Amino acid sequence: MPISCTAEDGTGYLLTEQIALGSQGSVHRVAGSPLLAKILVSDVDEAAARRRLRSLVSQGRRPRAAGLAGAQPARAAWPLVRIETVHGAVPGFLMVDLAPGRLSLESSFAPAGRSAAFPDATWADALRAALDLAVLVRDMHAAEYVLGDLKAENLWVDAVGRIALCDVDSVQFTADGEFFRCTMGSPGYTAPELIDAAEYSPTVESDAFSLAVLIYQILLCGVHPFHGVPRDGGAYVGFNDNIRNGRAVLLGPEAVRLDPTVPAPRLLPRALRALFRRCFDAEGRGFPDRRPSPGEWCAAVAEALQPSRLRCCTRVSRHVYAVELPWCPWCDLLEHGRDFYPSAPGIPVRQG
Image 1 (cartoon, rainbow, N blue to C red):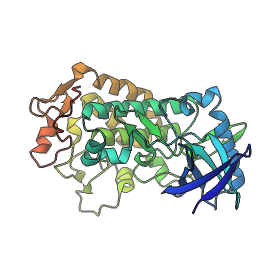
Image 2 (image 1 turned 90 degrees about the vertical axis):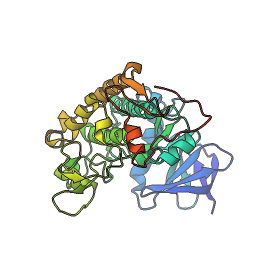
Image 3 (image 1 turned 90 degrees about the horizontal axis):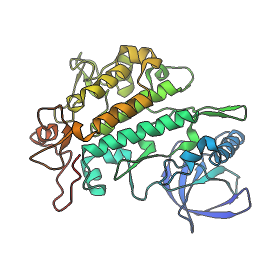
Image 4 (image 1 turned 120 degrees about the vertical axis):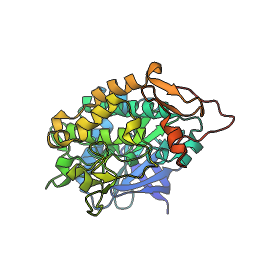
């Protein structure tokens, strides 16, 4: 059913097809416009939501966030115009549509989805996506935003690894003397200090944990760093339980049982493995300020992307891997029946 909305200047908009529904609102197409609209759920604090959206729209036109809100191609689905429904006056906003030319980061983890959208993608493109994500988080922090709910579901990636962020309206920030908190996280991306906290209070350090999880997933085709069934005979409860207890194959293969046909940490360059351990080991879990910063990830991933640090497999041209490895890890997995970078005949391959 179409929804009629108006902006603050009186302009009317007709929202048509609902294309997404989440815990904080619904996303719709806008008749006659390439923009999308998000309408917040009806049980939010509407006065606070209006102040938050008014502030974000304003900041997108100021130096603080102009580079994030107005970048081309888009880096974020920033609130551009505040709107309200005609009936019920539910707040919402207009934003750019990130989907054209991009794939949701979650979908890019699966070989079939990635190959269908980006048929010439290699592991070098995964490194580029990891680097761009680290740059985006670094820039958000520099502008004094805490993402709070950083997860694969909220990210989009294009064919050359450029990352864009949706759900910008949930970020945490202070403006004009008012503090706008991010109130929710997501299992598997929540930093250990927040998992059992009485109040969800994200920080740049908790974002650093989420960033490391995402970079690990990007580089290992969606495998979560805390994935695996406990080897002590206990039941697998979920990612958060493994995070809480430090169960990760990277930290100790004896802690979990992992499917041998999925990418393993050994395919990562040593420098990146060291950063992951620093974030996920007991010290990184217990002392948030000791985790690698987005800037450190930028430097380390950029180094891993240097042509001299990458090798192209002599058997399968789309198999790109770290030069320090003595064998092609993707061919190793292919021999176990899993093709994470399937060949695409007739498509030129970008080598390295």
